[in-house]
Image (cartoon, rainbow, N blue to C red; front, side, top):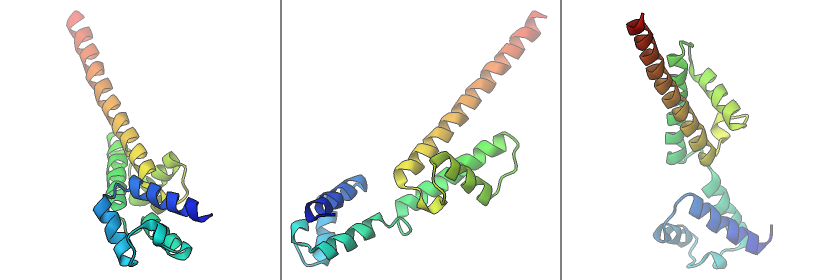
Length: 140
């Protein structure tokens, strides 16, 4: 990747992570520069790699826990026995990734909201089903 591409990638990742100007400034201060244009290619690559590293990312950790919780709830509501590995396997299949810890934050959010939607649809369906049963019982 050329220099311009590295700088664009750096700023794109910062935007996706929601970093403020002050936070980006703090990152650049660690390299002793004022602008991303002052970084060498090697420094840009190292910085991009660090920003993309989700293993220590608090936000990713929270999203993973939320995904596991919502999938576990979805399974329990269907009387399916769950465990961490089974839940992770479902999350991987839903996201299209092979490893749970490699799923990017954006995809984790999509999986989380999809399972939340499934839960809401199931809850509303149960309410409607009960109303129909009650209606039929009154009519008979």
